[in-house]
Length: 408
Image (cartoon, rainbow, N blue to C red; front, side, top):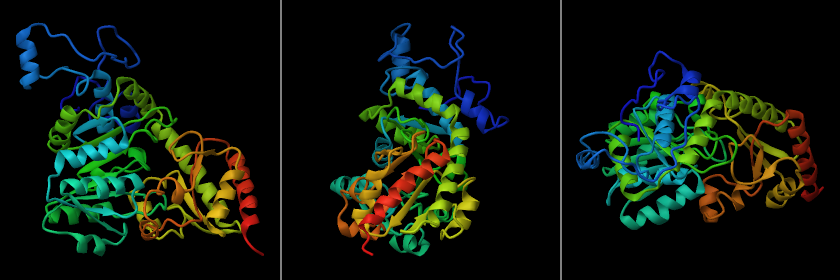
């Protein structure tokens, strides 16, 4: 957990994003290693009983037990905090563990959450089915409707939560406006930044209090490991969220932290290539027969295109589109592709494709899916780093198959 600097020469504002991504947070050992080591240890040895007591009491910093102090995990936390512009970071076992840690670390029975309807289906279930058991209520609102956010506020609202862009419709919210709204009403704003990463968007600089990541996605970038993270202030994250992690233990493993460190080194380069390919495919899909609409903020037709241009440095690598013919057409499309991987994961160098209504949002009620805009003909694509012509050819195969289900 990031609470102090460990002497890395680049942990200062004079260096820029790419330098921080490659070198931030690293403090070499006496071995003089160039690459960050993996500290595969569960515990640490103290010089004497007094040192052990001082560590456990918090009087002196240092490693205690790898559930909550591990040098490899700490390097990842410090590096990600630098990239997001935060004071502290807590790494967790998954993205969902990061969201749970925020809720358990900051909320109590009787508190209220206002959340976007356009969030990951499992996050909806966490709020609705599990936090509600402990007396924390959630109101879901349309992501882009600021008046709906205002109307949903209560005296006991403590947290505003959203993903922007959203999954899978790529809808956006104005982060700065929501931050002002939250703070004026004594609440915190948490932004899931997994789709953009700090390479494209830094919510803390726009007033958000907490940034949440599924490191499983673009921070890794190659679909290898599970992990999550929370970035924010020393008080909110460095104390409250960290306290929950230390006690409950939804901990990131040292090996996974090392993999994520390697992913961060190439994050900016990968995101630029992802975004370029995704925009080309979105522009191509708009012109294809059988495609009712394409959801991608890089298109001028997107309702929040201007906001995306202001809030993000590029438009992301996720697009979704709706097909004529509903679920049957969507499934024909997905079954026909040969290059894209049929998997619900995203953020990989390998392009992936899924049917949200029956996978990522399949556990929601039909009514909840309708409110979230998840139609049966919707297909989501995470655009990887393959050759753009090969990707276009594969999508063309899907389009040809999908049209077989549409009556003449």
